[in-house]
Image (tube, rainbow over all chains, first blue to last red; front, side, top):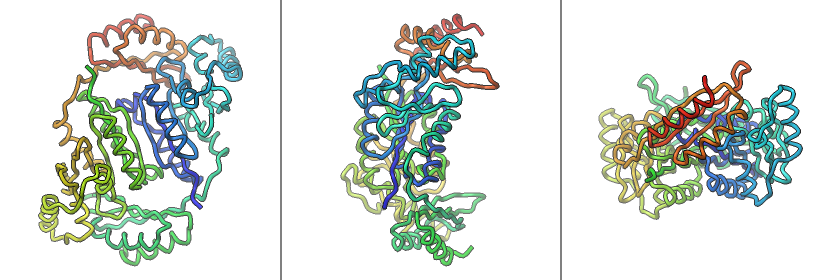
Length: 240
Length: 240
């Protein structure tokens, strides 16, 4: 039985211009691996409505679950919510439950709830809110798409809220070994091993350090006994 | 006149499993911005032939230039070259020019040029080799797709080789200012400013630091005088 699949959509000009280095993809990848959900694809698009619509539609059809990050703040370049609604052809407007959350938060601080802040209460009809313990403005879930903030602290909090609601699979067991041989020497025996363990994923990640060539070999699979057996065979071929 | 467009395709299970944090996207984004090529989309896919073919075909049609990273080493999970050839329906085999490069390199070191290492000489018909000053095994350019290594030092060297061959556009001029106000207070005037400068890209990147809310506002455009004018107006609304 194969694991549930997921995709991620990162939205933001600042990533594509090189101004900001995305941190959310690496975080989400690690969290999904822990619970046995296979992250199969990530796309990064700019703050462009048509690009967001096309990516949401393609990914939500192709994978079990989609996570988006970015573009749900109060400024004019925050256009994710409206375009996710458009992707599903669903009506969107300021929604009372989200507005009430924001109003309580801002009133307690003596801040004005102006038109810009109200943008953050724009939630598609039928979507479920995702809690934002950092700055209140919620994310939302519509169909199989979870729409979350780009600020890493908020993104991480939202992932922690959403993950327990998903059905995971078999968490991957992973073992790795460093082999101090050129990848070209390792490749033959490794391909032979991979052929005999078709249920395992065997990856080779080369490095060059202090003039020494080597590779980290990572064996992954949901059956821990198989992973151990394959690793034992590999270590017999390349004793450390 | 708009700038040339580009996309990037990152290939590798290790990124999607969270084992490795990709560094090449951020590097390429910065380099392209410097020469006025607009990076419009990035995709990350696993070591899966069909996924690679589909992404190469979609991106090479949609954008002027495509850069790939990863999957061109000697091991069984290095399947990029064969699938890029498949995406363009072009024959691929060990090619003499690439084989000669590798043979000279390995012979000088007394290493065997075995079947695994010969995989790195598999180059599609008609492709031009991209120099690899780090470990010799070349990348290649076919149609508008530049196929490069995933190891960051090699990726960066290959980008340095390829970039001067591309026609750039107007490099973006970028100015930024930190405003220590909640994004909800900044958003209204910012939207108004963005409306009056349709040729500029105006982004707001919020932060929360030591309990203070604020945002970095970045104004980008190819016309430096316009960028300066817009920034001057912004600073008049939010004096520091």
